[in-house]
Length: 631
Image 1 (cartoon, one colour):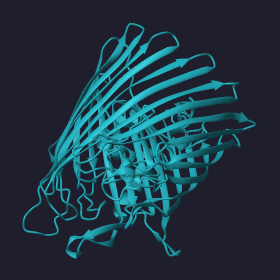
Image 2 (cartoon, helix red, strand yellow):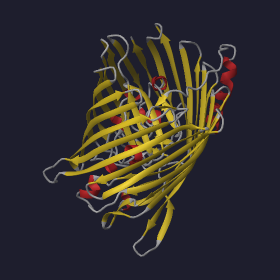
Image 3 (spheres, one colour):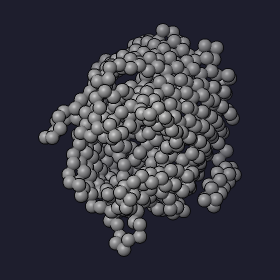
Image 4 (cartoon, one colour):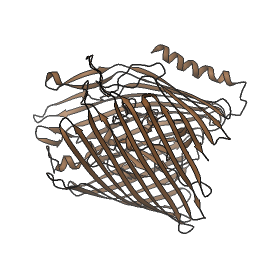
């Protein structure tokens, strides 16, 4: 491990001097004026927002052409995507600031997508390719006041591309790599007249993969677990008037692959995942008034064919959101909205239909730069068809001490409504469940140096979740408490117009408190598969206008995991996963005035043997190379 860390540090320290004679360009500034939507639903620049935001722009997405969404998110501070380097057919589990995966809400263009039939309502990231994304915005901390249930840890907003200039533009990417992995996508976009912008994308992926389960040393080799994915995305922006735009869209994905029976257990199991996600959005913009109205529908169908037989699950999710923001003055903005969400699992031969609905009015007020002080205050009231009502609030102040130093903090509450299975399912259902409730605190600072080309950030957070829904001998009940806290440090530096570098360090700790019927309680650490210490480094160099190189590495400390040992009646056993360090390399070269780009992505350069989930494999050294074009 020390050899790998030394290599990464050596690259970071030596690269600027290597290129010093090649580039005399002046140091650039960070783009603090780019508009952010997710943090407040009010268009604000990064300089204006009171919340820390991660923005992954289109250029960065393209420079991760060999990686999927889970691997791109895994490079960010405060985010851990477990099994990001596992077999390609494995599910990806996202932990934001240590919270359970079902506590992070996934948005597409600001619309939540949910699978009511999934465990905890968890949505599968494998269904969303990157080729149609313009940028990704990540807001950490409870966002339930703006986005409702499941946003206890934060939100990830996948913002899609709109039509390009001219009548017809074509884009695409084709790549091939280790494990007979193929990726190809093609798209067209453009503007028809002055009123219509459109974009269409098709994506195809396939891989032979490798065995998801580790072979404990048997004589017979385990079979490979591969997958296939077909995905389509289309969106049209219709400018009905100068102020009014209507945008219908459609997401469709179909994924099928193989999966094993469990830790150290091979099997010839097969799964399918299907996503249908149509919707429409309307936006009206006046001089000081903006109105947004939208509706989206998410239908997911999952099937599993295993040694236990064939099972199929379907979930349907309707979401309608109407909100407006009004600028009272240059310093005060108001937002008010109304959200309706309906979750359902259709009737099956042996199971009755299950459904629930949440109706939520909400409002926020934003105060901008009053003697350097800005704040956002919000409130949301939720009415659920089963448990009744609950409310959430948020308070996020920030103070610009100077134009180089900003301090901020927040206190916000969040909630996660019980799922349909927990309320009405066949095993341990309890229709009297209450929502899980959270309170989140954070405080931090951002420092801008060297003509705002260097950004240094630090924050502390603490999150407590009460009324956890657990499965007991009586079925599902509200009982325990989860408490997590941590420190995040990061630095991003535009050293010049050709050199960028960054680093982050995360400390995370937490425990669950169990409350028993006899009045006793016990607390224990339970951040399964989440390291207490982790850090990452990256360096990007535009050697010439055509050639770009990047190195990125990450270190993850020891983690705990659980093993349900089949040789011991599947009793739970605690295991420790070793720390590991990875180094990845990426290169691209542009030709034909940048219309075509050749790229290569080398993961796990030193072929590190590491474990993300006990009893399951991870990739060794792997290479993907291809061509990207835009004409």
